[in-house]
Image (cartoon, rainbow over all chains, first blue to last red):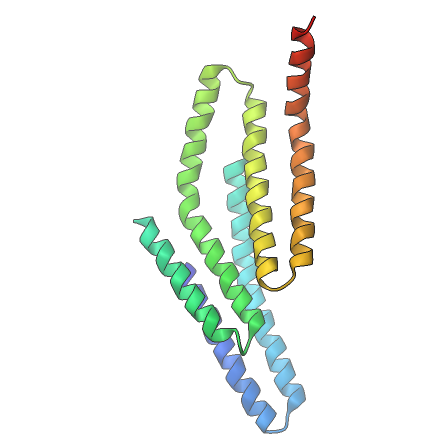
Length: 64
Length: 128
C-alpha cells in the first residue's frame, strides 16, 4: 500500500501544478486557486485514512 | 527482508518530495507523512511480538502487570508525539512541534506517577 500511495499523491501534486500553471496563463486565477484547494483536499482525504490506520495499530500494539 | 523495503520507501519518498516541494510544499508534506506511516506499519508487527515476550517474563518475575502496561503505554505515546512533532518541525512549524512535545511529556508524567508512588511507598516502608 505504502509506495503506491506515495506515487499517487506525487501524481496528484504534479497534475495540480500543471493545471495551476495552465489556468493562471489563461487568466483564471480564481479557478487556479480552487484547483489547488481541491487537490489538497483530495490528498488529505487519502492521508487521513492512513493516519487513522496508524492510530489503530499503535493503540492495539501499545494497549493505549 | 523488511529493511530493503523500508530503505526503498524512504529514498523514493525523499526523491518524490524533493521534486514536488518547489511547486506544492503542502503535498510534499503529505508524501512524507504517508512514507512514515508505511514504514511504521511494516515494522510494528515485530515490536508486538517483543512486547508479548516481555509480558510473559514479567509474569514469571512477579512484576505487577499494571506497571509493565504503563511503560508500554508511555512508549506508544512517546512514539506518536515524536512522529507528529517531527512532521510539524519539517513543515516549518517548530513552535507547534514544541507544544506537542510538551503535551506528550505532561501526559507521560501523569501516567508515570503511579509507578513513582509505588517506589516511594516501598522506600517509606523499608526506612525505619
